[in-house]
Length: 212
Image (cartoon, rainbow, N blue to C red; front, side, top):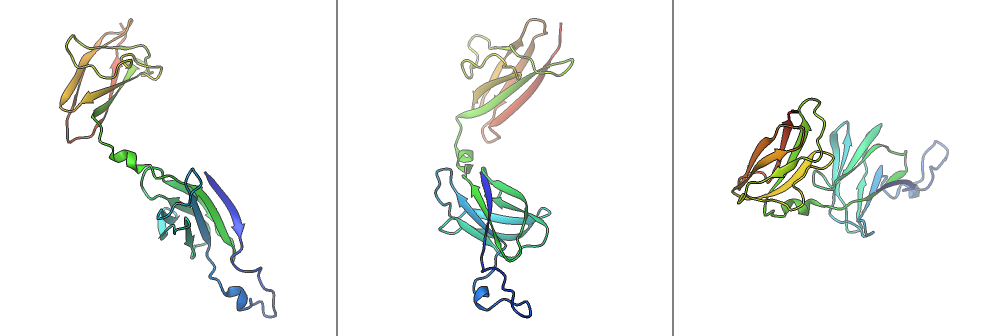
């Protein structure tokens, strides 16, 4: 969730003789952007990385303080992007921002680092089988995965493809899921997918079934 507002950092521009501001008005450093980061529950997020980019290249890097605020003072002209969270799960990008002249632009962001889920140790491989019509490559619903007697069975209730042609199965490490894919009107096809420890636990297989 993102919001924008204007927040004056210095008093309004002083229109004095010669067009110069008073020393008092310049007592606080002008920063182009102030990024305020909060969690979904409304708490300030401290220590979140904040990158400012121009044409895809970083021109400033900082982190939010104890109040969940990060300041980017020197910004180029034109449109810039601000990325909160770096390259981890949950990162938020606010794009096409333009700095205000002599006025700090506040950027309000709701951010939650969800990278912890990437470190959860799964109990096996997460297999997605996608079934398509061999003629027009459209997804096929209602294809049954038939496992031979005594064979490895994965997730109960997910032996039949959904409307997107997907079958989801959990395959234990160092074992293989073997079976036959069957649907009336199509030639059956066999499938055998091993799960090897030490390799990616995310498996995806696309199988095109031929019409009879």
